[in-house]
Every structure is written in C-alpha cells, then in structure tokens.
Image (cartoon, rainbow, N blue to C red; front, side, top):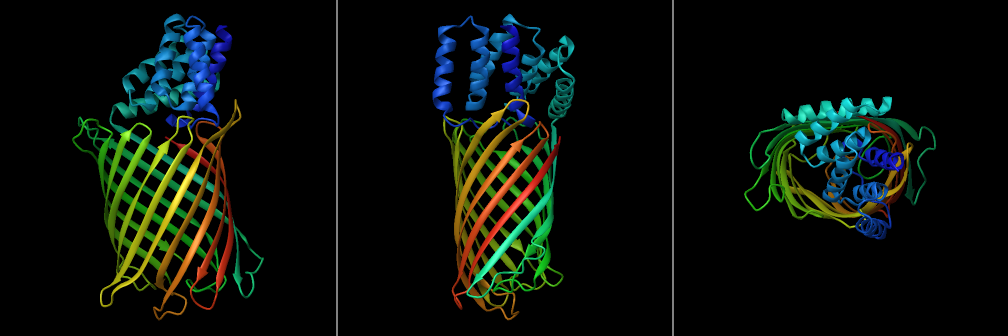
Length: 424
C-alpha cells in the first residue's frame, strides 16, 4: 500500500511543474467528487488518501490537497516523495517556511531518485531566494515559424522560404518589499526575433523582412486596502517597447501604464487598465503618441478548465493632425489540461477566437492615407510539459482580414513549433 501511495504522490509532484499547478483534466468534476467520497468513506486507507491528493491538485483544490498530504505524513513521516510534493504545494501558495521545512526533511530522509534529488535541491534554492524576498525566472524559446498568406483577388505569396527560425527570451526578477499587502517591485522584459512574410499589401512594404519585438518594464505591484491581500491590486509600470519591421520602419516608444486587478473569488479575476506611449523616436510611421486601454477577466471552473475574455484598443495621435488612427480587438480563450502521461508529459491546450477593427495609416505608400480593415482569427495552442523546466509547444492560427479598399481580402495560416527551457 505504501509503495502504491508513493507512486501516486510522485505523479502529484510531477504535475507541479515549476511551482505552477496545471488546470484539471476534462471530466474532473465527477472524479473529484468520487475521490472525496472515497476518502470520507475510508479515512484510514492511505492509498485512497493519496489518490485524493492527486485529484485535488488537478482540480485546483490546494487547501484540500495540503490537508490530505499532511494527514498522510502523520502516518508515514519518512516518505521523502510525499515531503517533496508537500513542499511544492506550500511553495505554490506562498508558505515558504513550511515549504523549506518539508523539502529539507525529504532530502535528509533519503529515498529520492537522482532526478527527484536534483528537483528537491533546485526547489530548495528557489525557496531560499523567496524567503530573501527575491524570485526570478528566465525562459528561452527556440523553434521554427511558418506562414502562408493569400490575397484575393490576385495571387498567393511565393512558396519559397516559408519557414523561418524563431527565437524568444522572457524573464523577470521580483523583489518582495516586505509589506503586509505583499507589495513588490518587478523588473521584466522579452525579446522576439523571426521573419515575417509579406506579399505587397496595404500595410507594410517589402517582402521577407526580419521582425524584432522587444519590451522591458519596471512595475510596482501594490496591494490596496480591502478584506483580502490578493483581492484588489494596482500595477503601475514604466516601460519601453520596440517593433522593427525592416531597415526603414520601426516603432519605438516609452510609456506609462496602470492596471487594476480584482479577485472577488479564488476562481475569478477581473482587470482594467490603460497607458500612454511616446512614439517620437520611431521611424517610418505617422503617429507621435498612442493611448492604450484594456479590460477583461477569467474564470476557472471546478473541473480545472478556464475561460478568459479580453478587450484591448488603442488610439494614435500626430502632433499636428490630432487623432490619425484607432484599432480594437476582442478575444475569447478557453482551455486547460487535456491529458497527463506519467513520466512523459502533461498536455494542456487552449483555443482562442479574436476579432477586431483597424483604421490606421497605410505604411506601404508613405503618404499616411488611412486604410480600414476588419479581421477574425482562431488559434490552437498546445503545450507539452516534458519536465519541470522543459516544454514543447505547437501553435496554429488562421486569420482572415478584409480591407475596405480594392476588395483586397487577406487569408493567412501560421504555425509555430518551439521548445522552451525555463531557468529559475
């Protein structure tokens, strides 16, 4: 029985990748109820208890998982794998002292495999940094990007060189300021490089051009007075952003933004915000500044699946002409964990649908004539988490854009296959 329970706790530990618990599998609502009923019916059965911990982890019922694993450890205090699973749970909910105690005891007890021992050492290092008030993460992504664009009426793009290398780096450092409201200072940034494939269209000149996107920000994450630390927060950021389309066109700016984040329940998150960018350092565009706005939210269902809604928009301004462009986009996103194969991968999948409108200057002619367009896009995003630090992603997207001039409708299909290594 102990061996069976240890195997199940090992699966629970494997699911807690990098301190981030995945969403539950489809149909987990019934599985959770069944596991909970079995636990109540057989409170002394450690195998049933271990099974419930695994199901509770998948369902996002972290408090139930913690109480159950603590109950298990009362009877089997020298189960190192259970100690490691408990440490990951405590780390996820921010109880770093308890997390350190559990992982240290698990290492001292022994019995972990070589890979589990390495995971325990890495987890302990993250816990120690968190106790000092500093956490960080660096994600390095490499892969291939493929795109095919068709214009109607009149020809598809050349079939040559439709596959391009893709690279991305994302990272952050977070300093806990030690306040009762868990205030923090966050330094973050990302850099992406690939090729964008264009037939001569109504927005960007040229054919195959190197595309580079970069951004960096410093953010004050401030908890606001209310009944709960995490239920109302204000994020104030100073940032810089750049988009390079080719040697003659790049959009570069610095700005300020703010976002209110509200969590009325554990399952619900709502947000709204806005910002301003000074674009005077740009080349080949007509806007000198931009105003941004956003609103949205997400809800996590009991079965672990999540639904997200988001609306974003912007208005461009020129110093002499006033408002010269505007655009807005709405998006609906749904997904969660689909499948887990022990010791191989955890497969999570999201599907997203977005649609929007744009009325902005045409950059291909260089005279600033506005072009109106409408678009819709559907995307499938799959992540296969192989280990705590490694995942493979397969992203597919189809988009249609309808221009309000010359009946130049654009259809495009994109695919991104990538590998990500996360360091923390």
